[in-house]
Image (cartoon, rainbow over all chains, first blue to last red; front, side, top):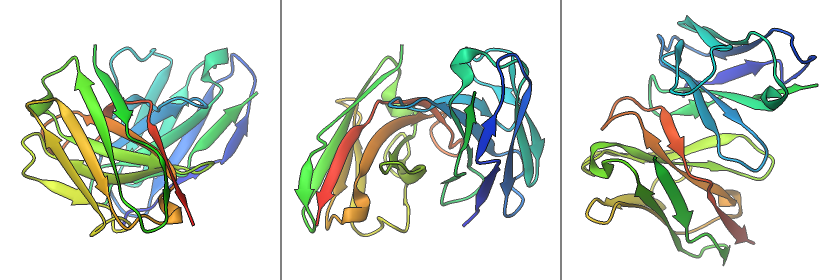
Length: 106
Length: 121
């Protein structure tokens, strides 16, 4: 099973700041990685797929990069609605797996 | 607009059975693979099971293999998850998700709000 490790678990930042979230895979997954945003009590929302492709309707301030085992999600300028939890997911191999999540807080 | 709406969640006793459903609309249902993802209270996301557009291909997490069965009725635009031999650790919100393609592009483009399954021991 491919294990995804997200860091940090919690990130404390201010509105307007640039943040970088990390997701590390236990083995190479090429670019088969997606990122999701999840707000409390809501279903997750797809942000990025293929490591760097923004999903439909996602603002340009969100960008993904990386390949192999190291991936990042960058939010260029945090807006108030961005303070929530972010998850990565690999689809390189079965079983599909998620990271433990990073919480971005004020 | 893609809409996914789960139903059927309930409180059941350990060892019991339950079937949850997902009604899909706003897209050509039979063209896309569908997946169940669950989230236990206060925990992270866990992939449960996936099924291809035509229903021929399925996959299961080891934690549910042999106990859960995923199926779909493309004539009704519905996805199902039959859960048997339920355990306390199956307690979670179960989300229905639409994948990006028929099979092999296993990221989750759309999500339903979920249905809560609680297993009492």
